[in-house]
Image (tube, rainbow, N blue to C red; front, side, top):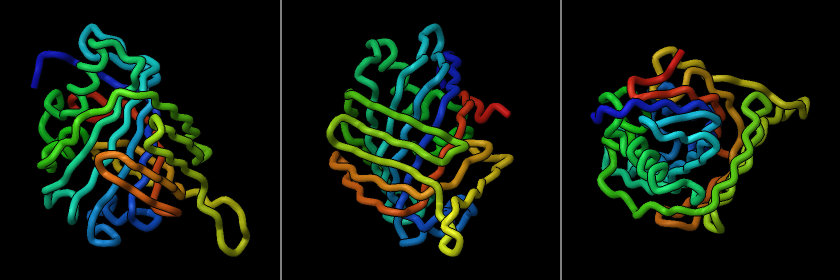
Length: 211
C-alpha cells in the first residue's frame, strides 16, 4: 500500500446477472453459476493524497466464470474523460486495489480475483442516481447504457422497497435493492434485464467503509 490516503463519498449503481436480491450478498452461489456485473460511481466529494476527485465518475465491467472468490475473473475500467492526468492516475490507483488495506475494500477484494484486465477507457460518463428512490441512469460513452428502477409488487402494482444491511461489508453499509438493466459493448459484453441492482451511498477509504 502507498502512503497516499484517499476517501470517496458518492453514489454507487451496481447491476449484475443474478436474480433480485443477489445470493452473493448472503454468501450464496451466484444465481446462474457465473458472475457478471456492471458498476458505476459518481464521486460527490473525494481525494487521493493532495488530488481532489470531486464531481468525477468511473465505472467497471466485471466477469467471473464462477463465484467471485473462486477467481479467474476479468475486468475493465472506465474513467471520466474530464479527469486531469493526476486525477486519472489517482482513480486508477484506487481501482487497482493496491492503495487499500488487504480485504478492506471491494476494489482490493475484486482486484485480487482478476487474472485479466482490459485496457482502461477514458470517456464521457453520465450518472444520475437517486439511492432512496431506487432509480438510476448511466451512460458510458456510446458503449454502455444501464438503468435501475424500483421493484414492483406483482399483486398491488406498487413499488416494493428492500434494503441490504452489511455491518461488516467491504462495499457499502446499506444498499437499496432495485431492478436493473445493462447493455455493454466493450471488452466485456453484458446484457441484463430485470436482474439484481443495488444503489448505495458510498463513503469509503483505504481501511474500508466509514460508518
